[in-house]
Length: 333
Image 1: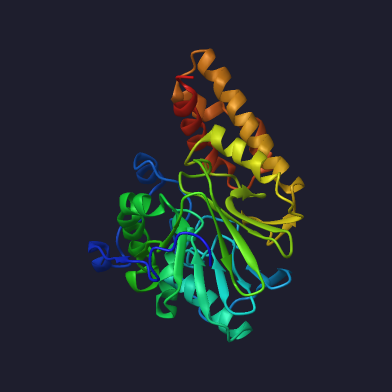
Image 2: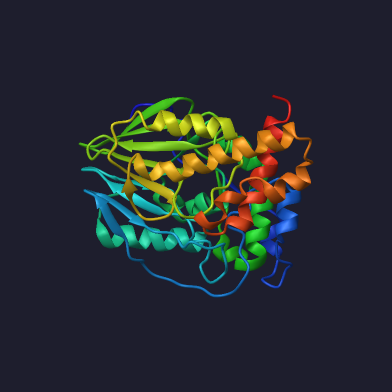
């Protein structure tokens, strides 16, 4: 491994949320919006599952579980994001550990079913719950937890809130704890799995303020996490202009396929990014027009991006907040 390694095991956080019962109040959309957080992955119903799950080998040694295109419920245990692992000659890298302890443990069981190699790296793509709460399932493996240099800071700000809301529905025993990265990526680093080098890049604010992407040189596979949404409505929690620029930067990689954070297990690259690019462009254009025309932010949330409604699952759950975020970013341009 080459890069910044600041310790092998991440730290964990506990909170009063551990004492919440399953009957505790649900996190409403209004609560989440008022808290300034992404709506992704707050559960709303009941159920549980165990054991390994089906995975698709999208390129040699890269195994992906497709997330469910819906908001999280207790039935799906926040398993709504794509997650998986990469096999090297010597060890395994987990690429996003899942959305809950239960989801992470199913991923861990799937890895054990596929290989006896040790799990040495667990990459958390960004701060949202569907990409971090499975990390505690891997603490027993003593891996290096990898994330953006700002991930720990943002987890400190939001982690207790996220965990409380998940615990109130899943129960603390299935939610997991907050794990912070031991290897913090400031710019770029390389992780050698043995005969396979994975490039890790920390991005400027885009989908969030703490996104990282992975690139597998040996198969030309890009794993951008939630920097790429396919079919499911995007969620803006960083910078609209930054996200558009990051998408263009990623197109410069010599990648032939990508694993989106949400959507099919693998898609052609860069063509699969075109709908997201169009949506972000529309969001910026409509927001600038609303601001120039004196439209209030409340009204803009109802109209900006409306032409994209038929193109995305869960559009009405996310577009209004995206419009509000875009408005705040562009208002003083």
